[in-house]
Image (cartoon, rainbow, N blue to C red; front, side, top):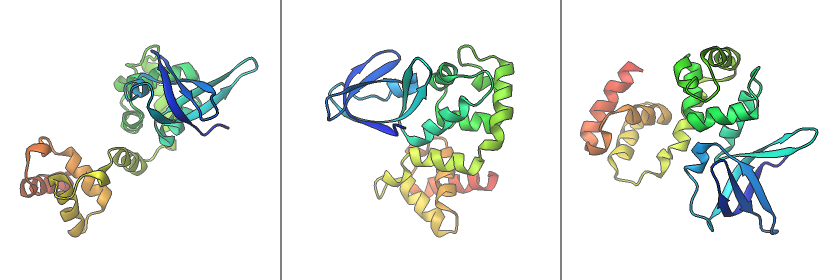
Length: 203
């Protein structure tokens, strides 16, 4: 199995990218729109996590930004009636992070926005996947993608997370509360701590 492809981004189209490896091989990788939107300019070095779909007459590489997104793609294609193309259509409409929460919260409407995915298919997806996903893990994955640890020291968000941790809250729980505060970027640390504490009281 090809776990990931690392190399120079040489081509970006509407549905795929080409990454040239150090050995000079250009790998054509099918990706969702959410990945296309995050691609740097051609000539940049990229690392794309992949899933290799093997059929009798073809092999297709599907690519994603991180390993957790590959995992959600693999879960999607286990759902009755949803193959790789359907899974790709879903992940082009809704991010893997948002999809996890949509499944866990029974949000049929969010899932059925994907082309070719009706309400019945979305409901079936929720039924088949809900027991395979955990809310706590979904939050952990989202927080890791938001790179909370990379917030500069002295930043109000970082200061607030540190303060909440000092009060006994878990770091993930504290970061989640900060991210829930509307207008957090315009607040100072004191204001943000008060607002985050209110959010924590609601969780």
